[in-house]
Image 1 (cartoon, rainbow, N blue to C red):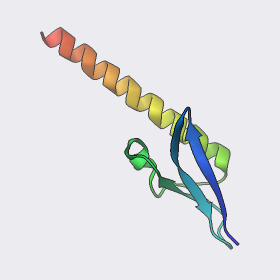
Image 2 (image 1 turned 135 degrees about the vertical axis):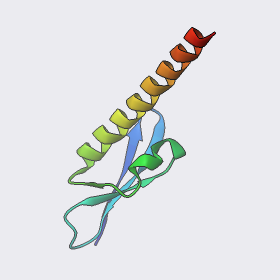
Image 3 (image 1 turned 60 degrees about the horizontal axis):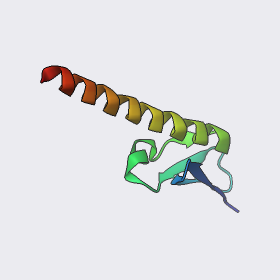
Image 4 (image 1 turned 120 degrees about the vertical axis):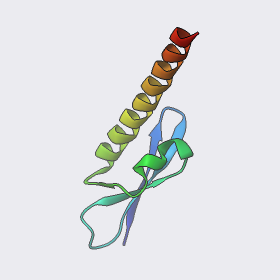
Length: 75
């Protein structure tokens, strides 16, 4: 029997992790394009998958802010 969990970040359903019977790790399946970088990654437990999704979103936001700042300086 497989086990699955929905991974949510804020109001977003980031993805789903599934552990098939006999497997030791959960496989991440992205539900939104913003989390596609996590697609196929394996996690030991749901908490680690949730933390990775949160960190991924924070990283995307930092990159966006940095890109905007660089554009402002270029003007």
